[in-house]
Length: 130
Image 1 (spheres, rainbow, N blue to C red):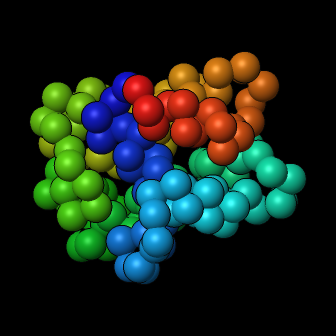
Image 2 (cartoon, rainbow, N blue to C red; image 1 turned 90 degrees about the vertical axis):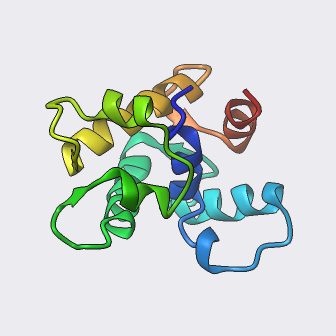
C-alpha cells in the first residue's frame, strides 16, 4: 500500500473529515464513501473516485497554483518522502494533477479486490486494515 496512498484516498472518500467532527472512523469512512458514490448505487466506480481525487487535489493545493508539494499534502495526512517521490514521475518535487490522480488510481485498482472496477465499503475496510 502506498503510504500517502490509501489514507489520502480515504480523505477522498472522507473529503470533509478534516473539517467535521465525526463519531468514529468506521462511520467516517462509510459516510464519506456514500458522499463519493455520486450515482448512489452503493459502490464507488473509477470515474466517481477520479472525480473525488480532483477534489482532494484542489483541497490539498493550498497555494492554488495547480501543483501539490509534500508540505501541502502533509496538512492532510502523513506523507513519506518515498511515497511522494514514487508519485512524482518527473522528479520535480511537485505533483501535477495528472501525477496525483495516476498515483491514486493505483490504490483504487489494488483495493478493488474482485476487479470489477468498483469499490465497496467492505473492500475499502479490508484495504484500510492492511
